[in-house]
Amino acid sequence: SSVCVHGLGYIGLPTAAMLADSGHDVTGYDVDTELVDRLDRGEVPVDEPGLDEFVTDALADRLSVSHDVPASDYHLICVPTPLDGDRADLAYVESAAGTVAEVLRAGDTVILESTVPPGTTVETIAPILERSGHSVGEFSLAYSPETVLPGNVIAELRANDRAVGGIDERSVKRAAALYGSFVEGGLRTTANPTLAEFVKLIQNTYRDVNIALANELAMIAADYELDAREAISLANHHPRVDLHQPGPGVGGHCIPIDPLFLGQSSENLDLIERAREINDGMAEYVTDLLDDELDSLAESSVAILGVAYKGNVADARESPGLRLAEVLQARTQVAGAGGAGTAGVDVRLHDPYVTDQRFALAPFDEALAGANAIVVATDHDEYAALDPEDVAAQLAGNVVVDAKGLLDRDSWEAAGLRVVRL
Ligand code: SAJ
Image 1 (tube, rainbow, N blue to C red):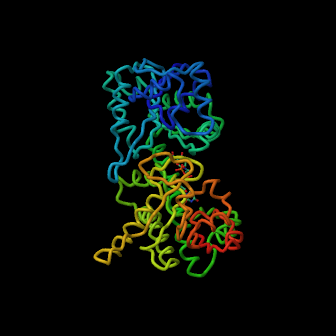
Image 2: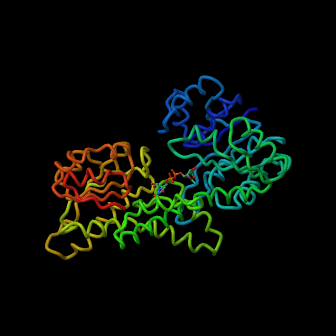
Image 3: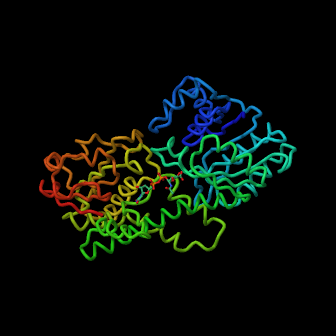
C-alpha cells in the first residue's frame, strides 16, 4: 500500500522506516521543511540507538520524504501533543488532520498515533477529515497508540502488542492490516477509538502511580532506617507484586503528562493527581536530605549528575535533575533573603549525553571540583562505572545522594564517602 506518515519525529520517523522495510511505499511529511531537507540529504536528527542506519537504509529504498502530502491509501498522524497548562494542545494534530482532509479519497484510511485525551479521534479528528467532502464510513479512521520505549524503539515497534481502535469494523480491519505487516506482538482491536486512547493513557498512568508508591515507600523506609530498594526487591518476589523503583522524580514527555490528559475532562482524578504531586515533590525530599547532611546547604556546592530524564538518553524534557537544581536554588535564596550576603547553593550540572547548551552543563571534573556533595539523578551507565576513589579525591565534602540506587554502597563508603541512597 501507499502510506503517508505525518510528523517525522521520535515516533513518525522510525514508523515510516519500519513500514518501508515491510514493503510499503512510504512518504514522510513534516511541516518542518528544514527537517525534511536534512532527511533528504540522509541526515537523521533523532538520537536513538540503531535508528540512523535503519532510516538511511529505508531512504535508499521505499521511503522518501516530501514537502507535499500525496494522496495515499493510508495516512498516519504522528505529531506531538504538547501540554498547555494542564490540558493537551491539539493544534498539531488538528492541523495534520486538516492537511489529510485536503487529499483524502473515499476508501483511504487515516490512523492517529499521537497521545491524546479520550474522545479526540471521534470528536475532533473525524469532523476535520469530513471537510474532505467524504463522511466517516466512506473513509476509514482509527486510533492506535505508540507504546515504544525511548532507547529501544525499533525492537518495541515490532515486539509490543498494539491496541487498534477503529471507528467502525472496516476501519479496524484496515488499520490492523497495516500494523500486521510489521507487528509481531498481538493486535488488540476494538471498534471504539476512545477505548484505545484511554488504554494508552492508563498504561503510563499505571507507571506514574506505581512510581509514586515506590517513592512514598522510600520515604517511609528511611524513617525505619531501611533500604527501600532492598525492601522492594524482596517484596517483588511475590507472584502478584510488581513495585517500581523510587527516584528523584518522574521525567520525560509521556509519563508525567499522560495522567493530565486522562483527567482533563473528568472530575474523578484523585489518587492519580496525588501521585503526580508525590513524584514532583521528590526534588523537595532530596533537598531535605542534602540539608540534613550538609552543615549549611546555602553555603555548599552540589554537583547534580544527570540532567537527562532517564539513563543513557540525551532527552532532558521534564528532567528531575533540573527540577532538583531549581528547588535547591529556590530553597537557599529564601534562606539567604535579607541575610548577610548569602550567595545561595552553588549548583553544578553534569550529563554525558545532553548537549543542550541552555543548561550550562559543566565538564565532569569541573562539576566535581571542590563540591561538598553529589547527587546521582540519572542512571547513566557512566555513573555506575565511576571510581569512588577518584570522586572522593575531587570533592571537598563527602556527601553522596544516590537517588537512583546506582552505586555500590560498600565500595563508595570504603572510599570515605557517606552514601545516602533513595
Ligand atoms: N522511573 C522511576 N522509577 C521506575 C521507572 C521509571 O522513577 O521504576 C522514572 C524514570 O527515571 C524516568 C520516568 O520514570 O524519569 C519515565 O521513564 P520510563 O522509562 O518509565 O518511561 P518513558 O517515559 O521513557 O516511556 C514511557 C513508556 N511507558 C510505559 O512503559 C508504560 C513507553 O513504553 C511509552 O511508549 C512512552 O512512555 C510513551 O511514549 O508514552
